[in-house]
Amino acid sequence: MDLGWLNLEQLARIKVSTVARKEVEVRKTAAAVHVITAEDIRRSGVRSIPEALRLAPGVEVARIDSRR
Image (cartoon, rainbow, N blue to C red):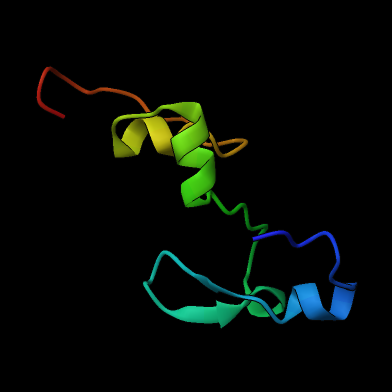
């Protein structure tokens, strides 16, 4: 979805899913939001959720052991 044509008020009204799995408007979130789209995932070629999460700036994903 191309968001470049939206003004700031329209962008603030976009709904995102939070950690609590609730849909809220971006302007009502408690922190910065980075959206990883399906297109981002396809283009990057990631094959797991941890790899996809690494696409977000400031997100660190580490492996604890061979299973986690």
